[in-house]
Length: 379
Image (cartoon, rainbow, N blue to C red; front, side, top):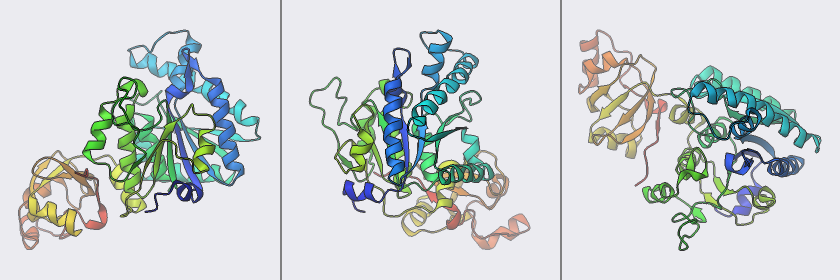
């Protein structure tokens, strides 16, 4: 894969840009100067033929100022109410900022349930496609007013990655309050060096990220690495850069070496497998033996009942289910051909024995390779 930044950005015609709360926040309110700068830069990209999907934090900061609070309350209903107040103010500021450049904006609020449900996933994609065809900027945020722990994305880094996969973006740009991924925290260690290019997201890369504390926002640097893992697996490059850097988006599209570039992997996942791997919500887990793990990971095989050691949880036929090795390391996600009760009956058996045990045999495979996506970490 070409790692030349100029070539990557020159070929990027659809981009997801995510801006973090620390870029947009100033004195317990919104940084209007930053909003205007980003709106101007995005408008310039659009005038040059680039389709832009914008994932923006900032609702909480806007709401806190409007309500008159100094910090986020602990109670979830109060946080959700503040987000509701703030989202209106946030989108209003974007409307005013983009209007200067004759651009219209649209607000889209999502929860993880919207993307884990295949029908709603497709509906969201069609809506965004329509807005792009109308030259309207989709401004996307998590729906904090209804999202609770079991349906929330967790942070807008993850949401931006999901949107990049949803829309087959050419690149994901994450703007934060740090220049990129550093070897250690640059705010406390003068020896910290920026990592300009990441070819493979190894555990050592995650270790670097985990050493940089969460002052970077809700997700912190580790969540950005998690987002990079998702999109690069789908063949989408990602850049982490400082949002406060003047004209950062223009500089990036001019090929300037800013931030950290994550190079996409060669084995690009199909759109459907991207949904299975990263948008579906696993309902259980299957533990497989070493032989099955090697066959799936190294040889691209399906999962047969003979390789299954244990079933965790209850799920129905067709459900997305994680599968892991004997060390409990998650290898991927797949859509099962049998329910958990049926798999418990046929685990460890040869396929010829399925009918004898269940009274029927719809499939030889518990998970067919066409319905299986590897998500395991690189060593």
